[in-house]
Length: 435
Image (cartoon, rainbow, N blue to C red; front, side):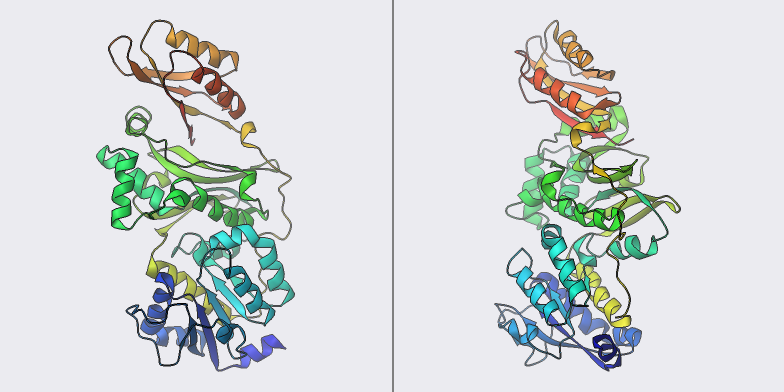
């Protein structure tokens, strides 16, 4: 009955909760392209209410009189509002707003990846129980059409591999370090001054933002929800110009913060960490604040989706597109990923096999390489190449090693033993290689 009423409506009313940067972009998009949007859905589209704690600051967009309010009930309890856009961010009160909207029979559009990653089951269950839709294209990859293609356009495929560069801040920092040979702290400060990094950048540079987006991608790709504390998440703070130069000059690779999810024999690998990506790989050319997701399906083969991963207008584009999708086909059955997963087990990072780059800082003295090689050999780790910078005898210098395929737990144990050696003067840095 609810669906029939919705389909018969000549006007669809939207309520927007959160009038910050992205909310302003949504209003600007509706103002700019309203005739186009209405033509596509064959309905009148009406932004009936905008709610925010601050309704006096000029956002630079035109708002009709009487639309602004500070009371969220003006949206949640308004029976005429059909779609609620949540752009508050964070966990609370955003979760309460979304659940209440769905309980009241309203469809929800959100860009809140943190909320989805933490409260996925609760949100999706509520949507199903209340016979409404929750759409979240903007939560991963900003303006890139990504989630709908994975969920719908690639529905004929078993997704086998997902590799993502899905945090613009981290990607900008690594790109700038590579281009100008600058250290991490210098580039981070510049990124903050330019507005590419937050005053507290921890969420981005330590990989948490990437991990939350990977959780959503893994649900849609593999039908399994994996909490963030169940997989390995590592940021980019330990990357140095030496790492980047060696990767480029000796390995023909670039350093990227990758989200990785892949399945083999029923085991899902899911992890976030810096990765050496060969320059010949499509992801190697994704630079600055841009995002990209590279995936492989068993039928389609490799697919790359690339574009602006954040920002006011790209993200608003995805939010408004979700609204139109709901307007166009309310009866569309939504499957948030495979209904039954073929994932039998989530592989622990310690059981991952990879090639590794190691940067070991040690005194330049006789016997050092022999001792390090001995530790690696005892743990079944074979060395593919080794290089050392020149230095005066007795000074600490970086030793660069690349291993053949090895077991993660063996490599981690080797690093632990190596770092305890008297001649090692700094923690060893490890970076996985993408092959």
